[in-house]
Image (tube, rainbow, N blue to C red; front, side, top):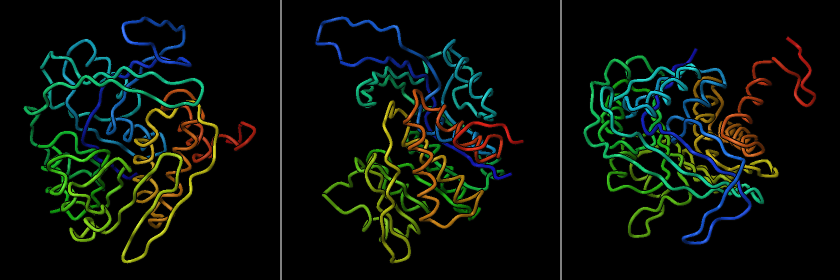
Length: 299
């Protein structure tokens, strides 16, 4: 079984479902709400695990009551966790999320602690992994793990959701950059051109439900995600990254096909509330436990 090392944010998502947002200084109530583990690296790791890989997660969570809940849920998802904030009682990353029930869009407030002191020796964890994926949100651990993985000569995937002041260094250490359309290099430089200059083997830009543009070894193209009725788009990009790692490394698909398969999993996820149910259904088909389309038990 392939081992993927995921380095980055893991937190608690508080999710509220409503068909509109409250006006300033007003209250709004809903009987439809839930909580779950969130964060780009955590969601990607859970997706990879659900699809059939073995996920290792390095994050800063801590031992507050909420931190303990996060780690318990991750362990329930078969994720091995190295908590760089173990022993600390400060709050972990917490997101308040409003999902619009009319179109599935999400609006997010994120409370994020100062993560600068989250450091531990990662060498043992990197040595176990067959590939590395980082969301680049933890600067020190991201750069340290990328350098170690480069020495080990294993694939190094960046989830580039937004531009950060150390992103050029991260890109220069990566083999794969899967970026959001919201990730803009300073000065208006084209992201594909920058990746090419820095020696990145494979690069892609996601656009929500729009086409995923890619380039590899001088070739370029677009992958078109399946058209679905979105119910909840929360975590879809994170799910895309976890599925991409699974199909590229464990299933050994080529770049374009791995992107296509990842887009299918992400599209499945937005058809259901929360970031898990759609992935679980894809995983059941992947593992042959149900017959796609009618849910008949076949194994």
